[in-house]
Length: 477
Image (cartoon, rainbow, N blue to C red; front, top):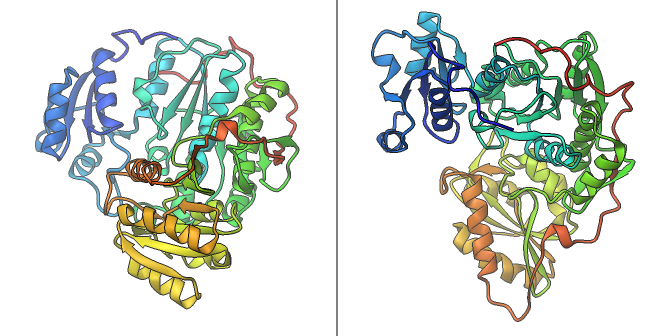
């Protein structure tokens, strides 16, 4: 691994709008590669942070004057079309300036630097972070140079330059996928589809179309992995059958390889099947794949076991920001205390009704707690509306002892922005509160020390591994 040459984007001019987790590293990376960078954020605090960072950029709103740049790099969370375009996006479109994501510019930089490193892209409504981290974990175990990031973090343009035999493993959101121009994934996976981000994509068809971009520009030398455990994904699988890439259909209901304790549930079996198919294509031997599945440590905020106190285990699943994600956690426990609430997505928790018999009691927090309370009342589920996470954790512990429930699960089925800066801050606070609870017996419990699960996973047997290291470049700068 090495740094990029300092002249890759010499003579280029980019506007970067949105200076958060993606934008500021993008601005810094482009400037380090020789580009002239105009950087902007609507928040003055973000502009000050950029100025103080020594990123080598010019702070200027690109929408305030002529749109004379080669491309607009728009942070994923900022809309360029629906529900209403940001002024910078509107200016770029009017001027015919392409709107790109930082992942696209990473790809261009890698190819301009002469590296033939391969790219693996992973998307889906749920499971993409786990699958991205799992694939990188497996490949790293083979000694292959690997860099993982993008939507998962770190930001794409903060990743190093990999050699010819390296692999970039990138989590791709629907927002990022809409802003690609030349990138072609050697291995691409779309795990599953359920309603999410419909305000940005208009409807379910628009959302599915955005996800489908992960397969753009693939050839017969590439691999397309598609989940088939939901109807919308199966429809996409049928479409993939008309495309040139080799197609691997994966399911969480057809297991063969044992999984470790950090991968509970059918949903994680599907994630592991996707990672297995991609790892095989990228040249990982089956013994390395098997070892990686067993030893994967898991990710924070995704069914992360925090602590066991007097027989009650606290599980942080703060990443579950919609009902479909919470379903994947609820199904793993026979009896539990459930902490839920925040800013609800369309449909709320109605789809979870078949799993309500597992909930001994719910503690509701956040803006849309009244909506959830109505649903639970109709279904005869005991609950208390407690408002905040600080109130919910001790109340959940008391309820677990009273109800004989062995698990307290934070799986909110909601976005966190009403009370937190993100799901990660929400999960960190849950962990802090759980660890601070007084109890006669406190036994820290990490997934790496759990007994190995007997769950297992399969992936399609492919006719051959992917192209060998040193194969011809995939596209240009």
